[in-house]
Length: 298
Length: 330
Image (cartoon, rainbow over all chains, first blue to last red):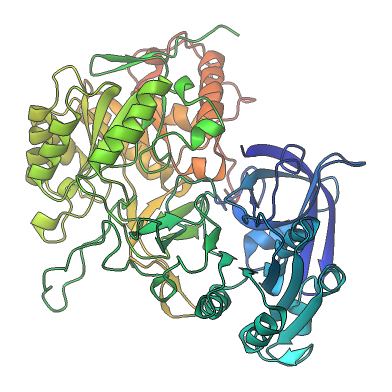
């Protein structure tokens, strides 16, 4: 059950190109599981930015000196994240969480490979912890554009059996992308499950590599959201259900974690013609005639 | 502070208070019920439902704009059958008053939706979303044409039980909103929902292309509030006896009060919910306080007061905030 909390900022630190914010958010920390996310108001009470910003939960401490704390990692993209980056300890932010469907954990001891792109590594590190507590072997692959955009490499090294790193520019690890090294990792470790979080292109590559080897994968997607709580219907993507029917499902409620082989990767950003309720073949439009305008399309 | 009688009446149906959700901004209430008790609201206005399941439009479906947002959801929904079995049944079991918004591509589709809703337990009112793309009228929307609007409203009124109010939801994207309002009322609308979103567009200056998958979208949020208040004002001035459900960028109780003073008997809180799920109940409390502070014993006494009708005892006080300060970056 998500809660809305006026959380106190405990700390805000730079981590390479990113920021890590820790909030005193009792009620959220206790419930959070790896893969859950939080959604924050930005800009203060009279903000012109109305929509929440969603971030995967990185670390939580359910108990301790400050009560429950929640940490997340972000990168400054625009006015909202800039405002967050300007917060200072003891400032208050309005946060809702935990939100979404978290990673599902295996019942048995399995060999798991975790693949993170950029700060997509954030939710994978607590997942690695949870998997190791269950006696799973954990191998990690982290990729980023450059070394300052790698997140969590030290922690990952500590908590994994092996760590592979790639960067687009070769400033750390192997020059290339995670999909360049993932096949060897999967073969070498005999991985039985793959977990991934990062940009959509990376998730697609990882899910397809896993599927081609009959390895189940779970991926946490990044879709832009307006509400994060399931009411606005903006964050949808085409996903095949257990009944074989493709639906446009919400990444904030049904996701952000999906089974990698259920996402219609090639069709993300579109509505596939065979999706439930997809528009039927449109009548041929006259040239130069715009499509029907969407007035009040919600 | 004296308690205010917040009850309101829309077309013969009594509601305990005037704060509703807005169609498309609350799904069918279940998600928001995790944040506050939705039965405490005047009503839950459900997302517009169509006859068949509908996938909606391609993503991106959303773009944040100054004090607002564009959406191009495209009426994604499960279709009337699933809606009746799951969503309306849930609202009824929960004890919430349900205002069901319907949308169709043809007059017949609206009529069929109204037939399917007839006699359904839990249905309190019907809101006819006539501001969606009209396949029968070549890219026009019903709400932009008085004849098309009246055809839809007449069909829905005919198929709806007489005791259930039928409200037509108007688009502000017209030359004279009172002309459409009059056409809807002449066709049998009990009242009017004012307003739907404004058609807007954002272009990504990096990709040099429209941001939204649907290219254009509906603009909502506080950015449109003055437009909405103006529309409520105009409709109330033209049709003072027709009840109005006002909406468009309501974020605070004082915003809601503006709509009431302009002539709305109830208000819907929409886009604000995306950033603040608990907003509807907060706004209800703020509205009650604002009415009490101005000496109103009953909400009904404040409806339309800005038009200068009955003189009020209230003397404006400088200390009382009435809106954003000039020059504030709201």
